[in-house]
Amino acid sequence: MKIQLSLFFALCAMTASPAAAGWVFYADGTQEKQTTYIEDNRLKFTALDHTMIFYVDDNQIAFLNPDMTTYWKGAPETFAASAKLTSDDIRDLIEENLEQVPPQQQEAMAEDIRRQMLQQTGGPPPTVEVKLTTAYETIAGYRARKHEIHINGELRRELWIADRIKVSTEFDVDQYGRMLRTFHSTLGYNVETAFSRPEVIALYKKGWPLRTVTYDDEGYPDRTQVTEVVRKPLTAETFQIPSDYEALSSKEIFGQ
Image (cartoon, rainbow, N blue to C red):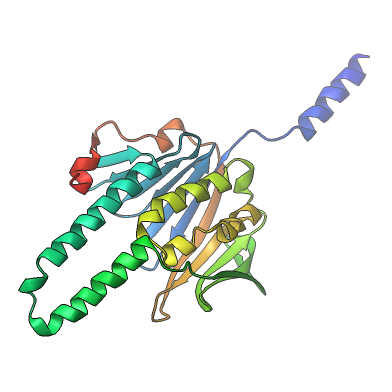
């Protein structure tokens, strides 16, 4: 009996699920290195001059400025409302000072203001089409497949997805997408908001992108590629705001 029990527990140990662990993605961008950490419904993105942390369960976003050792944290709805008010104030200021612009430039400036306001408040949403290609590459040791995102008929982004990297098992991709759409809502209908549409966010359920290529209005690419993928438990401090950072209010950031 003891031998049978020992064999039973040994088999259980061999087949048990591994302990929960996070993901770390080290990447090289066009101009800087970037790191992304994901664990337990939290995502932290770090670049040279800023850090963003998404606390998905709490519907909170934090922006950190390492140069100024300051941060703002709040709901994406709060950010969107404050940012939109600021945009409105800027447009009002431009209109108030329109008479200071030479007469030959006033109409062009007014048209530019109207165009920006239309982007903010209305206009037709862009058409978004996700195309699955047959192109594969090995990136950071993982086989990745190219997916194309076409906006209004033009290729605007490539996502090379590694389907072996299933962050969606521990990270609520749908809620993350909703947070992004709310965050970008003040921008109106444009390319950035299109990238957070549900049909695009759904790709992150298939796997994680190890290469992202974004094309600007002139067709020039901006490329970010993961160079190393690490699977390990992350410390609580990874997603904490440093204690020496000063909290900023919406009024200090947006002038409200």
